[in-house]
Length: 286
Image (cartoon, rainbow, N blue to C red; front, side, top):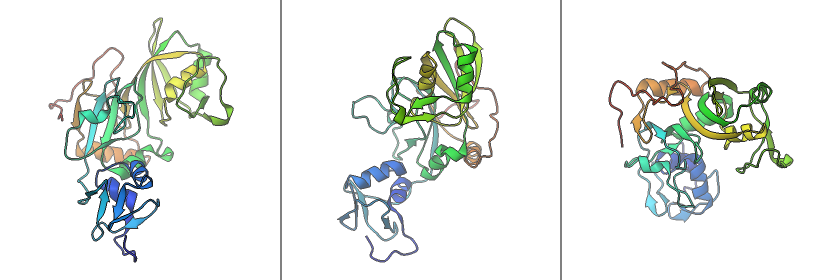
């Protein structure tokens, strides 16, 4: 790394993210693991800087060639895929839908058993802005529940409940780890289809790990299915496993959402059992 930091110096994780290698968080993990070199020296200290115009930066031995042009895609994620670049358990990942020279990464997450709208990009700055808590970007889900929750239970969910931070979900009534608990933000919930196992529409402003499943488990109910049908101004309009690139107008609307200037979606999200309506033009696939 250069001894004297010039005006072009940037944090390494920002440079790596801009090159499309990983998200900023993923770049930090690469640095900490000793997989990044600057001018032939391994760098493991987070916060280290380099000048992408003058320094030779390598990740896993491969030289970075500057920032990629920003790309923005939406994917209708089928269930049975994890929203990571790789999985230690060998499960399929959402990267299988993107066979392109440019690398993109998921914004937020949908768990393995959930499906629906997933935003993918190589724009780390926008991804961070959309996912930070202060942005309060609304995410809309269709949720099928086993059994009929009482109005009192739904009222609890609307006001917020205490859930575990961890990834494990216990059985209803099982002991909870009180030292790892967090209160969920208020949620909007309305009944969409009344049945023995009803469907609800839920609108959340945060994206904690397996949050919806944990919320219903907390009030004694099991979630059978989750489908995300809206993300800020975006509405699900693709069949499962299909992708398309966002328009300039949609990207601009996402930037406004990240600034807290929410745009209303152009139309309503699809309901349960109703396939998403495709856009007038043919979706772009990978």
